[in-house]
Image (cartoon, rainbow, N blue to C red; front, top):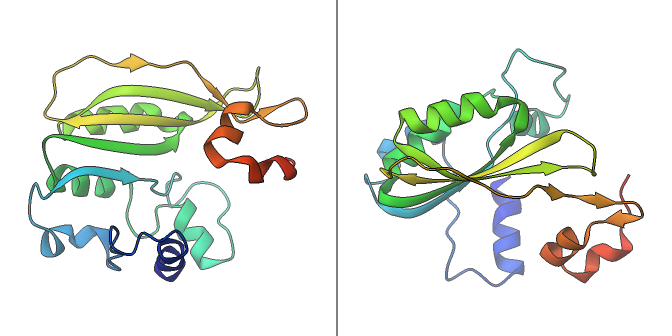
Length: 172
């Protein structure tokens, strides 16, 4: 996964702006200084290790299930690395939103904005996008939902995010 990230950084010409550090997140205190970041963005594994069917491919299994660290590990690393007022962004499963928000608050990553992501109109939310602020006071703004698909392909919002190249790709 680190090699893939490096290729993407190179392909998008961000070599001078992004450094890929390949390490175990649970050892963040040995890698980074406290409060050394202004922004942390994460997309951690969503499912607890013992839940559901795991993918046979180890990379996929680790990306989806908490096999080498769970939500708390990601949140603790973010809380350690962010200075007061620092911004935290996370993509997570909607069904685990209670775990996410309570643990964020416990670690002083106060939830400030929340947006539910739905496949289509009428579908339940599958994912949530959450922004938190380290050490901020309470007050959560819930934004309008995002819909990934419309009747004949990707929604206009998703096309706008990913660009015109997605127009040719139809949903499964």
